[in-house]
Image 1 (cartoon, helix red, strand yellow):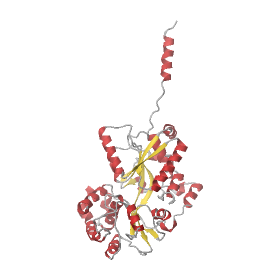
Image 2 (cartoon, rainbow, N blue to C red):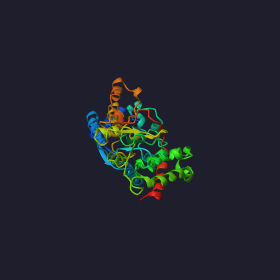
Image 3 (cartoon, rainbow, N blue to C red):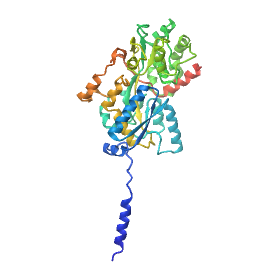
Image 4 (tube, rainbow, N blue to C red):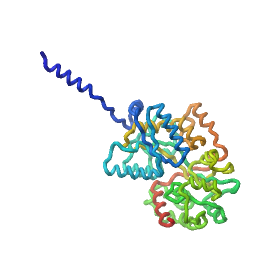
Length: 400
């Protein structure tokens, strides 16, 4: 009798009884592998939670993603993504390279630059998503605040700094930073959020773009420029502007949404937003009167793209890819572009869509309150480093 044969059979039986553990996907894995691994995963999506419309939109997306792919999406409502970036930085320093608590995050600008600089991103997954082929070919998709994206984040929506005025009180609003200063000096009511609030920092960059004599310096790191010389016109402008503001430079709204509320309450004549369709959504929800209109300065205003990214230590990277791909689908993008649900401009190229998908976008009624399509040029964001440099100097000069 061969005693080795029963032993070999026993060993084989024991080995085959051990469940096989699925290998983790890579950013360039086949989509079939991603879908297979993602099913049953829970994706913790850290995204701003300060808007009822956005929160409701993500609730809808979660339902659709669960139904289509068996992935559970959990929206972690946050106030400032910079706090999450700081937590990830601490985890990186401590060597916590797996089982992370953040699977997907809504990010752009200086926060993306910090994540990329700290090697805190999972990999170049964005171009591997099936719906990436539908995205518009745009510099703001390739460069985030002048920092190359390199596929490390997936575009989600477009944005541009806009101004909202009430035609009943200001039928001819100021069309430049210089005209805005004259407007408030003549009694017009205006205020901007205090930096580092996003809308406030963007307002600083907008004024700097218009007034500086060295625009080319803004595309490079701030420490590569003569900061004092480049920004001197900005501080001279703000020194004149602040005493004329609502609050006289001593009190500030916390964000752009607060300026919209102040416009509705009759406290200011002009509000700021980074969504060209926000006024349309606000009118529909009773948050602004029908007499409001949206416009930009004649020389254009700053615009950018916002993205979603996967941290290097995400626990559900496959599920995060599935969510990112769904957020780029024509179904999700057209719903997001509709002010009935959100009103966030799409990143998709209409020429890449089929007739049914194009019809979904063309049927969206923005009304007369949104920024007219093709109205005003979009100025590129300065290099990400300018945001922190401007915020620090502003706080030194003007913090209450």
